[in-house]
Image 1 (spheres, rainbow, N blue to C red):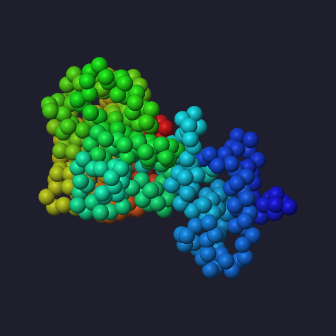
Image 2: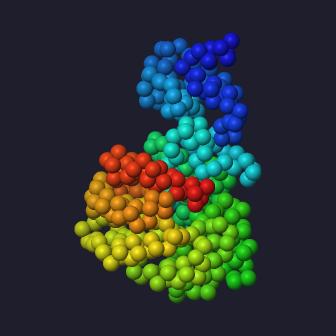
Image 3: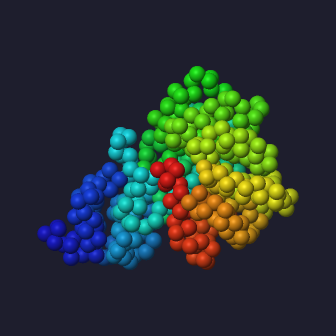
Length: 400
């Protein structure tokens, strides 16, 4: 009776998914459980739907009429029943490394829609959380805000973002306890980029990196301002080379401008050509990096050219992240010509979008960053293939 009712109902896409012998679980939750919940939802009186009552969540229903046809309908149905659990990773959570799915796979597998991966976010615990004390306080506007992983996931769910790379926040310096707890809690939604410690003893680099990998970190961040001298010193080169040997990418934050660090970057690349190097935030070609709407900021065209010149190294990638730091336009339209230049030089498969959450909240909002990405595609600035690579393909290749 139940199977017949499901098959003849608007939930038939779910049934077809269940019949697929290759997909028996949805992010670690048996599909029969999903089917039962959907069936229960389907039997609710129509007045319950029209009144906005949501049986499995306290979140309001956006509309009293739900369409569950097709692939997008599948996600609508799942979101309707399970609410933020689908996108926050509670359903995606699977215990055990052997069961860990690909980056953002819990959504993409079910829908067939291209993944959107945010390649650059920071999250931290609540202020005065004794379990996760700060080494440095967050910036005042964010000190009392909700910058937890769950707060981000709620934002991401509203914009259909399927996963994110957490970059260790400077608030915790080298104490990765909070981020590690998140990586273990939501292994299909998040990946981690650890903050490289330049003072690791030379004989301990292998063990240091192996421990980070075990904890879920698939990349390292080089913050040159934490080095006493050059980040391409013996310690930097050893960490950089061994990270590459272990399949870990290395991101570089040139907050004060690429020209200050270009020589070190080239030295690292030449020392270990097989290590993937990622330039954060468009290379920070606008300085100071306080945000493009700040009238005191200026574009450094020499820095921009240095970024383009790095395209000759096949192991260099660029994050199209923190749009607000490099754009002088609230809608980021002035970045379109530069985006085309980067695509022409690097190719879309070496570019990836990122928001720089939660700092994006103070500069137009998270939604504005996601919308800019989609508008680049809709306006024809990016082809569909380029969009899919920048949207999530490149990040999946590097971090998945």
